[in-house]
Image 1 (cartoon, rainbow, N blue to C red):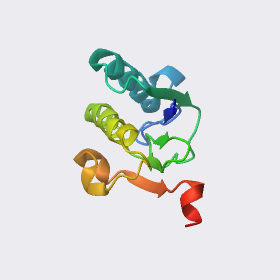
Image 2: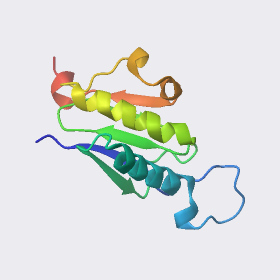
Image 3: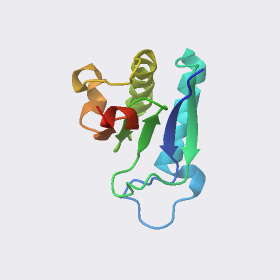
Image 4: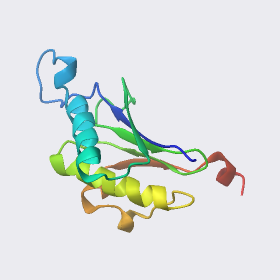
Length: 129
């Protein structure tokens, strides 16, 4: 079975905050919890592994997530702050899981995520073709 993983940066903080934000109150952690809840409530993407990570390296563009799977394209999204973002991410993940190579066109992605795509990386095997 192929493992599809959505990595969610839980240390992401909205840059408008001043001072220290408790780890469980960061926007990244809130997004992570919303994704888990939406996945359970809707039985959406049961084959998706949603995993919290400390940092995805795009701190100036919170909240960030990466959708990865061996032998498929990797997608990295930033600025996913809204409640709708969690729902749309799960919709995106369903499309990704159903696609053999994970190659998604911008027009296929939920509208709210199109402008939030930072990078799309092809799998190593496709780089040699």
